[in-house]
Length: 263
Ligand SMILES: Nc1ncnc2c1ncn2[C@@H]1O[C@H](COP(=O)(O)OP(=O)(O)OP(=O)(O)O)[C@@H](O)[C@H]1O
Image (cartoon, rainbow, N blue to C red):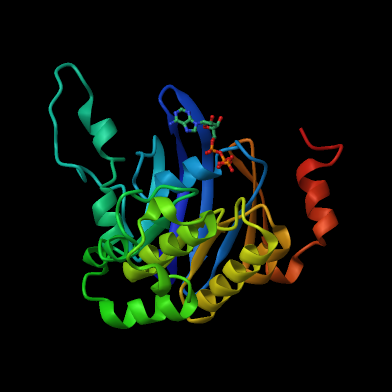
C-alpha cells in the first residue's frame, strides 16, 4: 500500500532519448528503511537515480513519494505543440524543485559542486528546499559534527578541496535540505581507504539518526552494513531484490552479478 511506503516506484522506464537505459523498475521503501543498489558500472543506476529526482523525465511508470505522485500530470506546466499527443508526455513529467521540496534529496555522483563558491556559500544554498522541516543552524551543527574537516574550510573555494572533502560538502548540502529520503550515488568513489572509512562511518551515523537512504556503491560490505534491502541492478533491470535477513555472502553476490551464468 502506498501510504505505508515512503517511496514506491512502479514499472519505471527511462533513458536519454532515443536510448532506453533502464526498464520496468519496481522499487519500494517502507518508512524508515534504507536500500542499496549494486551492479556493474554503466548499467543505468545513475540514470535511474537522476530520474527519481526529476533531473530527467521517466518515459513510463510511476513514482510515489510520501503519498504523493511525483510524475504528475503537467508538473512542469503545460506546453502546446501542434500535432503532438501532449498528454502522453506531460503525465510523466517531473519538477525537480518540487521533488527536492518534498524531501527527496539527491547527492549526485562525483564532483558537481560549483568550483568557485566557498564551502560556506555552498552549504547556504540548500535550506530553501527544507521547507521548514529543520532549523538550518542546527543542521549546520550536525554537518560540522559529522565532518569536522568542513568547518575548518568554510572560506575555501570548492576547487581547492580534495575529492573526499568535496564529497563531505556534497553530503552536507543534502542534509541541509532536511531530507526525508537521501539518495547517495557512489559516495565513496575514488577515495583513499582512510577517507572512505571516515565517510562510511559518517553515513552510518546519518542512517542511525533516522534518515532513510538509497545508496549506490561498489563496496558491497559497506552497503550490506548500511541497508535493509539490496537491489541487484543488471543491464537496466532489477535482477534481484534481497532482504537483509536473506543476504548472501559477499562471494555469492559477486557470483550472482559477475559469475559464469551471468549475461
Ligand atoms: N547524458 C547522457 N546522454 C546519453 N547517454 C548517457 C548520458 N549519461 C549516461 N549515459 C549512458 O547511459 C548508460 C548508463 O549510465 P549510468 O551512469 O546510468 O550507469 P551506472 O550504472 O550508474 O554506472 P556508473 O556507476 O559508471 O555511473 C551508459 O551507457 C552511459 O554511457
